[in-house]
Figure 1 (cartoon, rainbow, N blue to C red):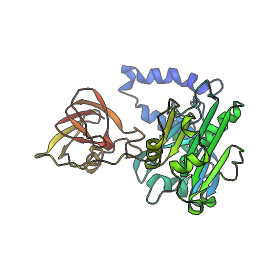
Figure 2: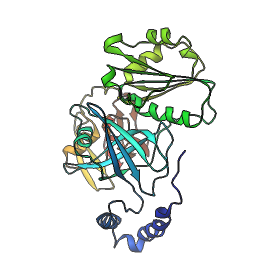
Figure 3: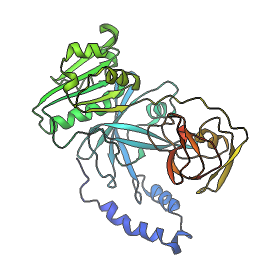
Figure 4: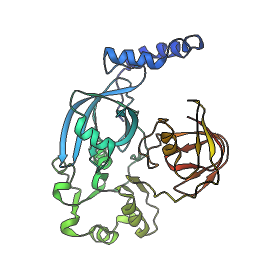
Length: 358
């Protein structure tokens, strides 16, 4: 794990944050105003936010770019396989998206973004983000990481842009001088669609080009690597592909660790018979909900701008606390009526009057 050297920014900002949080000061000086003033002095300055300057933009494929970033001293480091949330403002609306780290350097990090048709954030990054600009990040998150004690044999498996965290895992294994039996299998449409094809010349790597070699299935993997089910595996790719492989995997104690880049489909909802009131307590805003769609969509339709990211239930950027009332999880169909429960606005619908800390 790479950590920042003496964190002078954190050391200096800590007493300022304590002062701003004091009840006598909090009502007079808004922290957001201080942050805005610091940003106007220098875009990398902040009381506590991780800000990063874009050092380099690399064209990986026709529709994929990598961004090499140098974070400020608030960055606490990361483990290979983790992700960060980019916090952006696009067309006057605050958005977040989670991106896996494809490389972690001593003082830099790299994210790799595949342009998605109609994707607001991926297209914005692809078209607008250039070297020299500064963006805001979260600290690193996620548990798709390697164990402290590495197993004697190991499989890294990816498809499409799923190679992003797997690339970082491979970097970490080579950095740790892993001497076990390592196999890396990556699937893409063809060679031109193979992200990192120019930098990945690892002898453990097998690349499967599905347009030329056919669809990659569990049978393909079995023929390629007969002991694949017995290998501790870190796999990243489309959810349906991972689920098909896992369903075909024989029962084995070997760990199967996955990172998915797609959401569970949302279940259809029947609208409530009458509208119910939803109260966002922090913003002191209320709106009526008929429960026919997600709380995030209904809040936005009512003119609110709740914090959110992926909009598909993966990144948890829109997670908040439901203080009272009943919601339905649109991925699982489960009802939640217990107070003080964490919910995700993008996959939850109102089933009664609600009080939400947002």
